[in-house]
Length: 365
Ligand code: FES
Ligand SMILES: [Fe+2]
Image (cartoon, rainbow, N blue to C red; front, top):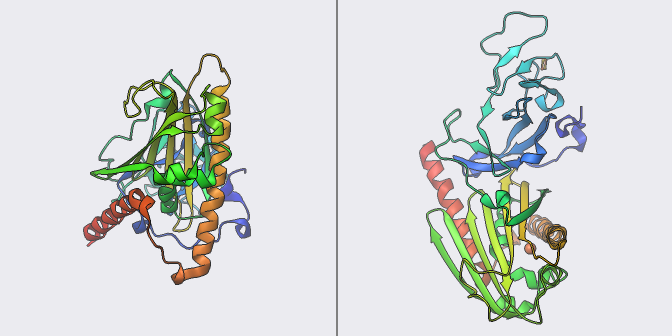
């Protein structure tokens, strides 16, 4: 028994009881990366719902409610066997559909011997889980595409964090990259004043927000220098796209005087970040990230350096965000916020989430 669901109860998170209605439903959320799903069951909680993820012997990904219908042991305490997962207590075997297909020592399988199954799809090395508003309802759309994981021009590395903070604090952080000049000086930072004064364009379309910041004449920060032979100056761009379940952040830089900084076909050094933010409970979330970067011919190790420094950078964000949330809890109602100019993107995203929750509440009657 290796899964986290099987650890002693006193060692588990003391988070408040989750309430799924506090999160937008009818969405594909990130459940993990393909490389995480093996022949061992993996326990994760998404939107307050305990799920066991596994990969069958045929390579199919599956997600079931993490509770055996017999005596409630988490299925993540069991084993993956051929086409299903076997409970680690009395051996009931469940198919990816949630149906029990074997009860050791008993021929008849009761009709109600089944558990809830979730729709999961693997795409571009990301495992997506559909969190429906109505149990059992089919997904109303396909999972998002993220082609850069399979694009030969890029190489990517990935990681994930369990965060002791609500998911929206990570949206705020990623939609406001002015913090780079204060939090990430050892890697992707640069001149704080330039970041704070960068012209910012924020647009919204449907349930998406896009923030673009252009910073010509920047001093290349350490990660950029490690990855690309920049001189004293570079023209930097940052394009952030928010979707409810994830963000795509395309940043990079050009040698001044080469391509136009706002040309999508521009050359230079590129970092494409994928950020899947999946709520776990009201107070905690999962943060799945990947960084895809372009190769520079004479610097064969450049992408490895970028990925390593990205991981360092995201460790810094986690320290800040978790400290921010601890302080919010300690100050309670007195922890009111005062907006400044950098908050436009984050606030737009918050309005989208609020709108979706209002719609959900109306649908629930
Ligand atoms: S608790 Fe799962 S088979 Fe008994
Ligand atoms: Fe950051």
